[in-house]
Image (cartoon, rainbow, N blue to C red):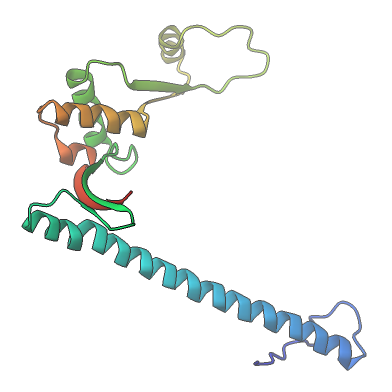
Length: 190
């Protein structure tokens, strides 16, 4: 084990006269450094293993299943390995892609029957504020009086995913690029 000697009179508040105390502190610090390196190495190995698992489950096996027209494979005395299609969607960022986000919200308003867009209106006011009015009336009053406020329409990510998948399953067109959407053919173990 590497001993790191870094204790100097400037870094020690209490006088350590005894070399046993210094050695004990250095030993614990070296142990901390060693464990930290081990955790970093294991985290990197886990990251690589997850990437390989994703490659196998989203590329290698789906390609083989597709090539041989297989939907599932039952392992003898083991799990069922099945090909499933999954989708992922998200609203574009309000900060980096506000125009694309506005288009996506507009598409939702015009193409999805349920009201999944929720609005969060944030208002800063003093503690002495006596009453709160409905959001639209309050926005009108705030705008009229020159007060600033935030009006952030949003859609819950799971609700967005569910509604867009329903549209796809009905055979309707969904502008995938508008919702950062993509289809994943993935083999899963059940």
